[in-house]
Image (tube, rainbow, N blue to C red; front, side, top):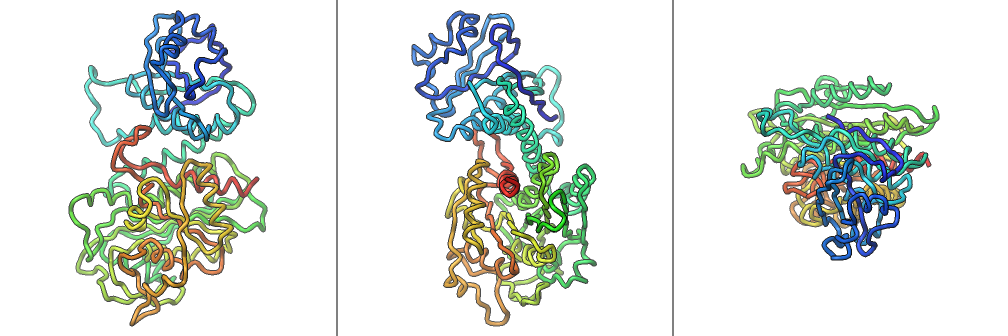
Length: 491
């Protein structure tokens, strides 16, 4: 069930809500705008702050039950020093809506003082993120254990800017929610066919042209790199293309490319059994493209965008590609297979080559590509590499605005020595040293002449631990970065 969002002027003298969330920065105390509310609550807000029972620290929460008619509960949520106020508000909103869901509260109100359009958008995105839950594959609990879901959130602050912010935040939240749902679905449900059907549904809603290539069509395109990964599975691989055309007729599109490995066993170079179930998340790049196209469609941005997804599963079998095999990509380059678990780059090679036919102004690809990126940057930052320094910076700025920070890594020619092959033009793995960089350098060989940036989201697209704002599972990254980049091109 999606969360209904709206904005309304703050009238604390007449407010009626099961839960009121007050977002407060550290050291600021109770604002005078809350005088009417504090009077209704018997002065408990100022007493709480004066006694330093609540100090407004980052992620600090204090739940107060109220006997006052109309305001049943108050939740104080700390913003910390709020140096980046939209980011702090996004986080506080996610914490509060998640807490509301745990309480079984169907309606809540959120107040953070005077807010502008960007802050209203951030709050909206956070509220949706915190309220999101995946229950469709679980047996419903018994009647005495079920809690009411959070259905409605009201942001207190009414102005045209706030209304616009709520609208854009709603669209971004929808994209995040779609990407997270696709990520949570197991590999036996979220197949390449399922991703293709999802793309068709998005296309039908927003008037996008959708093209889907299967095994036979890709064979005609001579996509030997992509198809070698699909050799070991009976499922039909899919190259999925969504074309959104609301910009000028002759304007070059932005290309968004996503890796869609619906399950990655590693193939013949099989992964260890422990933790392999997490490899259903190897399609989070593709989910990010679909989520971004959902958001772009809802926002009706005046721009041309082409989303491209390469989707299959990487399985071991008698027909699977083997270490030592040599395959030819659609751009003519021969590739020596060193490690069949370095399969995402093989899929993306042909997708990036295919993207050139759209004559894109820029292409950004996202992939859960290397464990080396997790070692380098952990689960906080996305690895960012590309062929154009200005474009790399533009993507980094977009990620920062979206709350999806990235960090640049070098693509120096010296690293190419690691992926030189004795028998082919290039090999698909250079070993452990600089693994994230050599994977990106491999992709660069297929990116053509257009400006290109690669996002390695292996450490940021999903989390194996509860983050407080969201539970274990997919985070929605890189939807925000994709959307902010495209929005930036319309300003």
